[in-house]
Image (cartoon, rainbow, N blue to C red):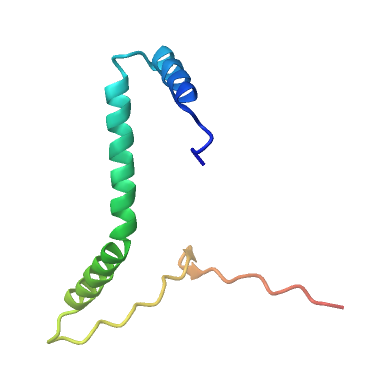
Length: 97
């Protein structure tokens, strides 16, 4: 890919970058680019480890959510909407004729 780029082209690119960003910003630009590449490599290599930690933490929270000495409480039925003390019933479906 870089086989056809010579020294002249690289110097020209460097001069254009210095004109755009200025000499004072180049170290910060290089540092930011280096950190971005390092973070990308780290995330690629540690993706499986992070996923395993998340699954382990999820399993651990499920175990601690239910006390072992007591059975789980049954779910309560959803509340029925009421108007003036009477339950609201949905309208009947339209007849197909």
